[in-house]
Length: 460
Image 1 (cartoon, rainbow, N blue to C red):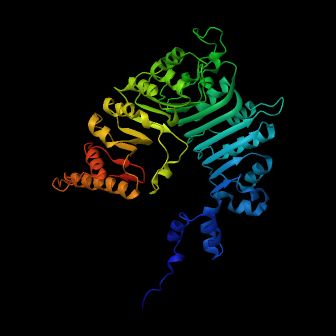
Image 2: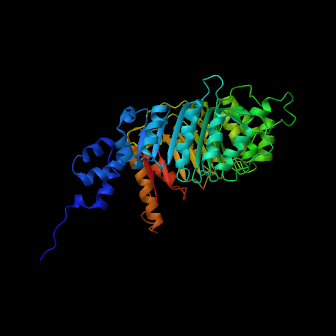
Image 3: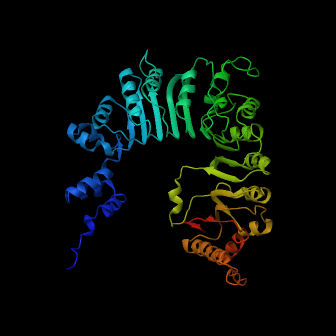
C-alpha cells in the first residue's frame, strides 16, 4: 500500500521558509488560503511595524492586537499616546529593534520605558529622541523610569540618542545599563551637571558624534587649556577605535591640540576616523588630532590635493580609504554603467600617490573617480596587500567592457587558486583596455573584490 502523498504547500517547514521571502502584500494574500497559511504568514505581516507607514495600526481591534502582537519584533517611529497604547495592548514581549521620537510628556516617557523594560533581554537596537517642546518637562524622567523599571539591556549593541537632556550621572548609568553596547551615536544632547564617577564602557568600539557634543563640558570653560569641570565624553570609551563626526564648521569649537590630548589620554586605541564635515575641518583634524590612523573616510566632494596630502601623513599605517556619499551600496550591485561625473579629473596624480605611497593599503574606494590606465601603468602601486578596489577606468564606457575586464581577472584568479598557472595568464598580445586592466589587477594576489563601474565582482 503506497503512502499518501502530502501536498508540499502543507508542509510546515516549507511554509516557514517561503514566508521568509515574501513581502507584506504577498503575505496578506497568502493568509486568505487556509487557516495554517494564516498562522504561518502572520509572522511576516506583524514582524515590523512602522508607524509612519502603517497608520491604521492604532485602529485595529484590541482582540486582533492581543492575538498577533507576539509576532512583533521591530517598531519604527513610535511617537504618540495612541501608538503606545496599541503596543501595550499587543503585549509585544520580544522586540529586537525600537525607534522612539516622542515629546517629553511624563506619561508618554513612562509608557515607553515600560515597552523597553518588557524586551530588556531581547532588545538589540534602540533609537531614542525626546523633544523638549513643553516648558517644565525634561527627558531625565525617562531615564529614571527606565533604570528603575527594567533589568539591564543585556543584548543591546547599537544605541542612538538625539534631541534630549540628561544628567551626566544618568548618562554614565545608562552606559553601565547596556553591557554589550558596541556602537553609540549621539547628537543634540544637553548633558547637565557633573558626576562623581565616569563609567568607562569597555565594549564600545564605534562612536558617532559631533565635536561640540563630545566637548560640550570643555567648551564651557574660559581657559580651554585647563581641565574642565567635567571631562569630554571620550573618557567613557577607553577601547574606542572608530569615531565618525559631522556638522563642524571653521573655526573649530575646540582647538585640535585639545582633541588630540583627550584622544591620547582616554582613547589610545583610536585608529579610524570618518569626517562627514567640510574640507577645512578634515584638513585641520586628520594630521593634528590623530596618530597612526589605519582607516580614513571623507566626503567625496570634499576631496582635494590638500586633503590627500594630510591623509598621506598616515601613509605608514593607512589600510583603508573610503568615501562618504549619498548612495546606498546596493546601487553598486546594479549591472548598469555608473555615469556620475568625476570632479577629481584634474587631480589624478594626487590620487595615484595614495596607491603608490600607502604600502599597507587594503581597501581603496573612490567609485566616482575615473583613472587612466596610462597613469596606472606608468606609476605602479606599492600596496601589495590590496583586497578591495572600487573605482572607474577611462575607456571602459559599456557594461560589456567592464564585465569582460572583471571576468578576465576573476577567471585568472580562480586558475591561480587551483594551481593552473598556464591558464591564468592573459594573452600578452591582447592590448585591449579590458586586458590591460585585468593584467594590472592580477598583480595583487590578495585582491578579492573589484568594482569598475557596473556590478561588483568577487573572488571567494
